[in-house]
Length: 120
Image (tube, helix red, strand yellow):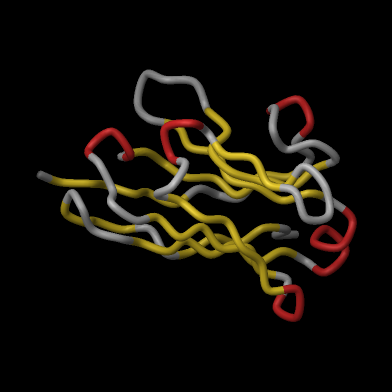
């Protein structure tokens, strides 16, 4: 049973923008905090954006001011708007849901991952 479905990855030039989407089954979206992680080849999966409470969000320092997380409760969907993309943003991006999404130990569900590639 698929719980989190992601879309929106792709190839973009440096300086460009992409928006990722993650649709969750209704119970997951209402029960848990949602967030996004990424994993580049050879690196650990890292937290980049997510909710820590009803309206509080947290971001990885290197994406602050460039990435924005948002949600549409009616669609049970979380978005990650990524602007001014850099080569180092290239990674597989994962949607996450859990009691605490700012650390991997708190993630209960993962999306399948979507590739984001930033070219020069």
